[in-house]
Image 1 (spheres, one colour):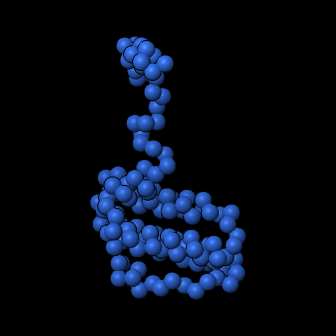
Image 2: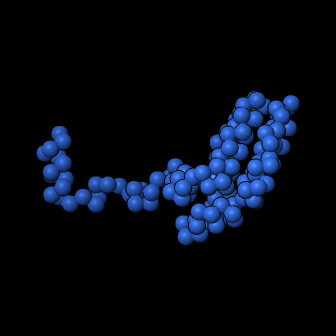
Image 3: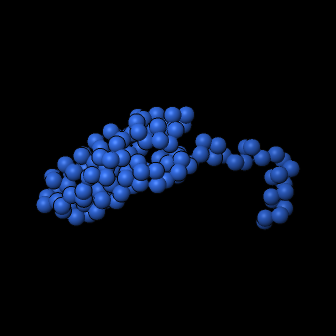
Length: 132
């Protein structure tokens, strides 16, 4: 799979929004086809599924759904192809992939709860006396 990604050249600039949209779908297909190899390279089977990674890639693409300038879309696709190439060529380490695409913007599961409920009365009074 890494060989096929190396063979992919940067496409010429899109002439229209429809052409840029088609290139975006082609990139998404390429990224989805690379997912099984990425799962094997970085041993992600214990922390994520292929469908979770695909939905992460889809959400990253959807973040820029409001962009209508074909030149900007081409630039974003170039950056995405570079990122995918770096991942497949193992230029990143496992914790980079987990931090960016598995955990992502949601934060760690242990950080999701309110913090005051886990503090004891001693710690609450300690923080109150020292930090106010």
